[in-house]
Amino acid sequence: MNERFFDLKKDRQDRIINGALQIFAQNGFRHASTDEMVAAASISKGLLFHYFKSKKGTWLFLYEYCTRCMQLELREADRRRGCDFFEMYRLLVKADAAVLVRYPWLPLFLRRADAELTQIDPEESALPLDLRRAAAAHRQELLENAGRPPFLSED
Image 1 (cartoon, rainbow, N blue to C red):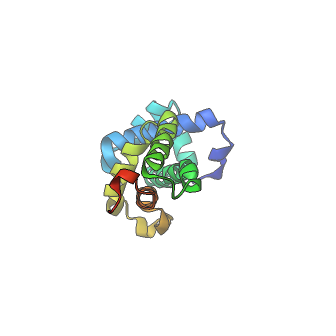
Image 2 (image 1 turned 90 degrees about the vertical axis):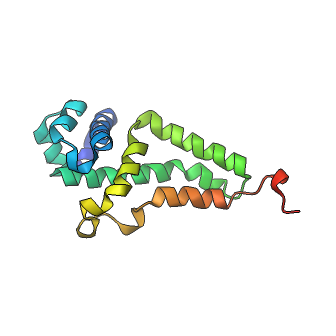
């Protein structure tokens, strides 16, 4: 991935990210077309390959970017770790909503991407092992450590 991508204005970055997310989310890695991605993002194919080198490079960037994006949105929930279950659930829904506003295709992309990891061959890629299913595991851990509501007491 070309780091100059982050020199672009944020709205252009988001347009490129959302265009690629949409096509990967709708079609999966194997059937995703870079022609459709560039059309959805309103950029040239050369520009897509300038920043991401290949379809696989685009997918790997999106997987890492989206996973980190979800983890960043969970910061408030992390700060409130141990609060009651309903408050934690509210914080998780708030994090989901914040992500959906910017990247509406992100949840579907991540769900589909997790199922496709073996097709993409992440062992030979630069995809950090700790990112795999990291957001889902983080959310589950936050919910499990939330305080039980009083009406669910063990008495």
